[in-house]
Amino acid sequence: MNTTTTARIMLGAAIAALAMTAAPQIMAHGDVTPQAVDTSSLPDIGEAWLEKNPYSGNARAIEIGTSAYNQNCARCHGLEAISGGIAPDLRYLELGETGDQWYMERFRNGSSHDGKVYMPAFGEVLGQKAGWAIRAFLETKYTEE
Ligand code: HEC
Image (cartoon, rainbow, N blue to C red; front, side):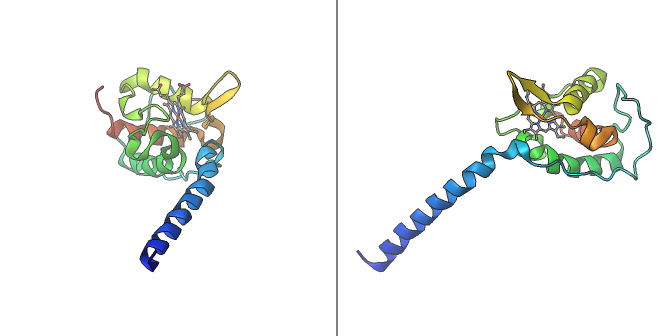
């Protein structure tokens, strides 16, 4: 066995070991702490939860929403809102008020069934300004099914 072959085998073993140590982190992605979002530069919208996105088309909201999405949602829903399969593809969320309401229901409450958390709730931790900013970003990614 020459040294190049030995080196290749050792590299292969190192990669396999690395893959195994990385696995638990990937599986624990649901527990990552939500990242705070600075929404102070967005117009105030009051305390009561709205039914319709007040920031639709607002450039500043889209910018904030893009970063908030990347930090809090992309690990499950995919970068650029293109799902890798573990969570629904958010590009297909209906536009307009019906889509807004469904979006907000999930954002606020998350989704759990049979005692298992599929998606954590974000309403309390991120607040509605961040929620609507993310929705404004998602609207720019809308794709027909
Ligand atoms: C831990 C993974 C995870 C994270 C993080 C996550 N989601 Fe989800 N999300 C899911 C899963 C899984 C579902 C499907 C739940 C079901 O069908 O019960 C879902 C469903 C949704 C839906 C409904 C989609 C549909 O087609 O019905 C919306 C809207 C949504 N998520 C938005 C978000 C937003 C916005 C964020 C970030 C603030 C986020 N999610 C973060 C896993 C996640």
